[in-house]
Image (spheres, rainbow, N blue to C red):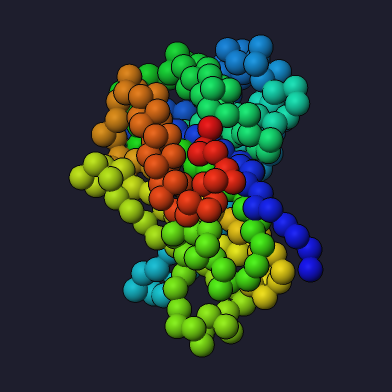
Length: 246
């Protein structure tokens, strides 16, 4: 049997800002934003993103397909990038994550560039999301050694568990913020080692309640909450292996 120590990388961190639907948007905005961030994000490309929305009404369930032109601005190593869509600005950092002290300045540069070229008073949505991939030894019966946030079954059912998705939403600050926490195993629970995805998605639950001036402060608060949530999702055994989210 392979001997494996728990491995905890952040495979992606994302900070997203969405503008209200009444804000005017045109095709010149990505170009104007690029001129302000080009020093940090010199490489650009364009893609078409398709999404499917499920709509339910009296006539039944319908699938509505929409498309959005997105522009991407990359750092030279392509590990950090900005994504621009209609009234959406997202800043991504993929593995290897270099810590908040490196990610936060990129968020600041991108958001201030957007605020300089578009007039808006508040944001419809802000989100900060961390996707963590954790590999631990053992099988599903040993999850309790590593996770406080985990599925719980009777012993008989646990012995027959193969795969699972656990998804919960928590509210904070009198319901103004919410956080979706999801734990998923990426391989069979009967394997000698288990690879799990711990996805923590913290977001503004009440649209248009955070002003442009307060937005970056909200992101800092969200980061503190994500740190707390992550540490409450894992046991002392795993904390001894990993430092808290940097």
